[in-house]
Amino acid sequence: MSPKAHSGWVRGLTICAGAAFAILMLDSAIHALLAQTPFGGPRPSAEPQVGGIVGWLLSKQSEFYREMSATIRAAKSDGSAVWTLLAISFAYGIFHAAGPGHGKAVISSYLVANQETARRGIVLSFASALMQSLVAVVIVGICAWLLNATAKTMCGAEKAIEVVSYALIAAFGARLVWTKGGGFIRALQAPRPVPAMALAVAAHHDHAGHGHDHHDHDHSHAHAQGHAHVTHHDHEHRHDDHGHDHGHVHDEHCGHSHGPAPSELAGPGGWQRGLGAIFAVGIRPCSGAILVLVFALAQGLFWAGIAATFVMGLGTAITVATIAVIAVSAKDLARRLSGTKEGGGALFMRGVEFGAAGLVLLFGVGLLFGYLAAERVTCF
Amino acid sequence: MNIALRCLLGLLWFAGALALGANTAQAHPHVWITATSELIYAPDGAITGVRHAWTFDDMFSTYALQGIETKTKGVYSREELGSLAQTNVESLKEFGFFTFARADGKKEKFQEPTDYYLEYKDAALTLHFILPLKTPVKPKELAVEVFDPAFFIDFKFADKNPVKLVGAPAACQMKFQRPNDGTANAQKLGEQNFLSGENSNFGMMFANKITVECP
Image 1: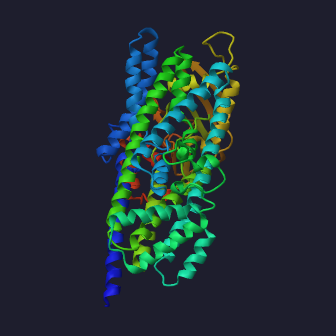
Image 2 (image 1 turned 90 degrees about the vertical axis):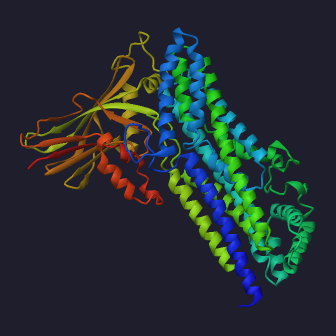
Image 3 (image 1 turned 45 degrees about the horizontal axis):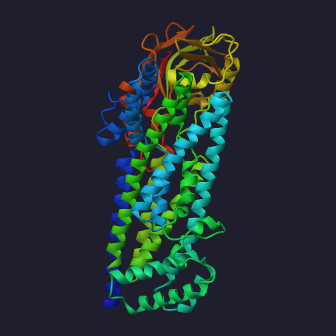
């Protein structure tokens, strides 16, 4: 075995270890925190195989949810019950975000795909949860309170919004895939000894990836001084590409955007970058919140329902943000692990980003066509 | 690089499969139904259908009543609830009425519900309907399960007289299994590979199973 081939093996193994670690982290995060195994069960008394955190989470949220109606009824005669209601709503939100919907998966995947920071992940989580609460209040406020529409009408509105949300997630994912696919393909081409090819392929792809590569270029330099010659060469190449396309990308710091939306091309630290994610995820209200709001309205305590909805959203945001931070940290860790090796690290990170972008697309399409069941809209 | 690439793609595929497979099965109930059911038999001993009476929890009952006009506040007549009852049974069709029947192991289909109406009592709505079988059957063993595969609705049968046989041949033996003692179901689910998206029959664990044996 030649030394070169050997180093290829080492690199492959390192990358695999990094990938396995990142995915295990994500997976355990998804499973432990999101309570996504089919073995979980909401009945505390039943199914001895429903064990540990998952069963406990599910049984808790069921409990909290059932307590809400009784607490709202109690609040009619005893104002202090509102505090109990808020406490229950908060706890419910925290536990409930573990369930489907609420955009954990979409937000986490988006963050990973887009090299976002943990701080931005927290902001995104809170903003989308806030928007979800707001949408629920607006739907019930307009449909039930103002227009006294029937549940059927309200549900129709909910369903329409749901479809829009899923379509947006899918579109958002498709754009991410397009953007990240370019970066991934270039990274694939990169170590090959035919730069002209790489250049040709790269030229066909969008500009966003270039900005991205540029970014990573700086990054790898900071971390790893000992670049192999081939990789270095490649970096320069991309750098050149970047220069080429500079006329199209007006803001090189924000190389993530592709497509016409000018708001997406916000400056560094701009809110607008994540606006698409917030909107796609946040526009779909939580069925539970709608039920609670209508119930509170019928009891003449609409304001208590609104307060409960926002507190619920706060709880949801905390869970989603936690998961998002874990996802981002896992990726950072993977980058550090893979970044110590030449070339392959960049490929690996591009691959992870591409994969995460693909997941967003999958989520959107899956939800849209009903392959993935999100929380059902109560329509009967 | 090839190994790394293959490894990476494999892992991504795995992550995707996990995400998709796991995502289908994670709801918690938002609606609670207390049910009673009757299995209806024809004089010749064939089962013709199931009559359900499903009482919704008070939160969902209130939600469903939103916007329904009444003459007297808080009192809903059967007529006033007529259109809601119709909406209910029409929507339930999409979910197969949450009722799954097998005659001697063969899946049986149901027709559109008949005799459906809603009743409002003690702050709760009860939906009554008859679910006729497409073709009446005379099996040795009949199994009827009531559950929501997505577990958005939690079906619990009434403590008293949960299931009745109406007009069944005297020799028929009925057994009713609640999900709480349904160790058989839980075991079956445990054997399933949770990675495969098709086996997301999470709610099956919470199935109520009626079995009738007619020798």
